[in-house]
Amino acid sequence: MNRRNALKLGASALAGLYLSPLLGQSQLFSSPLNNGVFEPTWDSLSKYIVPDWFRDAKFGIWAHWGPQCEPEAGDWYAREMYQEGSKKYKIHIEKYGHPSKFGFKDVINIWKADNWNPEELVNLYKDVGAKYFMAMANHHDNLDLYDSKYQPNWNSTKMGPKKDIIAGWEKAARKAGLRFAVSVHAAHAWSRFETAQRADTKGNYAGIPYDGKVTKADGVGTWWEGLDPQELYAQNHILSENSLNVGKINKTMGGGKRGVAKTINIYRKNSKFSYYSLIENLKSCFGFILRTHPRFWPLVTGSAIALICITKA
Image 1 (cartoon, rainbow, N blue to C red):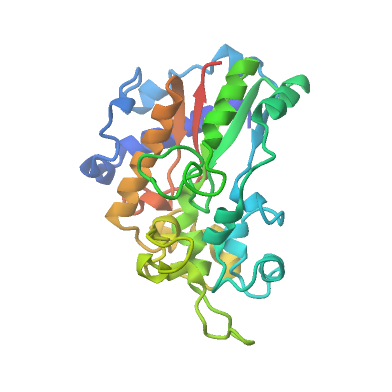
Image 2: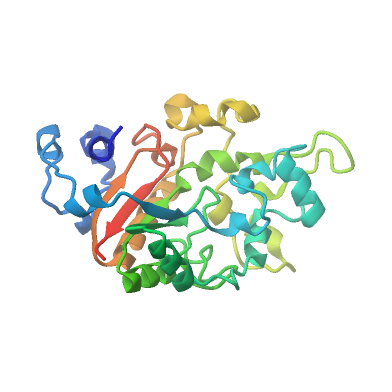
């Protein structure tokens, strides 16, 4: 698949959002950010032309970097650390202790990013030939890596590094003259964090729940006293279909019709405005693709991982 077709597919997904009757009822996109040159029709979207700069940019670099890098144990850490007996579970036990006592919220707390130098890194990427740079703004661990109005507690300016990671990346990219993009993967926090609702089935901690369902009331005397971990974990809901079957997780990417538990209104609302907040922070975003995902089930269905917003250099 070439870039032109890939972008057309992304635009098609966006059209699908606009054309959904349920979506219209929900006013999910009732925002000034939606005013643009395209109408919510296939004919209008088919007139989209890939920008010359992107057609000519043969190489870009993406920093898939956030709190999951703190344990240095690979991708999907926030999910797999709660899978009893898995490699990441064992690493977590060894480094931090049992996930009933030290969960991913606590990993976020000790992630300081104190050696992070965005200008040095972006200059390196430019030196090796990158024409654009993308940074991850939120992974399936649901921590916003920017100053988020609608995730005011669980974001990187308040937690962990206490830095606006996206603002740092953007400033460095603009200084280097690179196009800048962000990706958001929080689509699957609702279902992929369900492992945090589990408990060990054997051993000394058998039957003791992990920390996935703790609430503000449980935080007295802890570092997170006064905070509600459910704003991060979003696990006060029933399990999705086949949730206990580790091999079925990728089958749920398409939303409720593929077995994901129905999301609640406050979750969808906060998700929507968190995205808007990110785009507003970037100021000169000239286009974005929001592909459908379980976060907005039952309003929309489909499968994808990211919101992509590309700014001018």
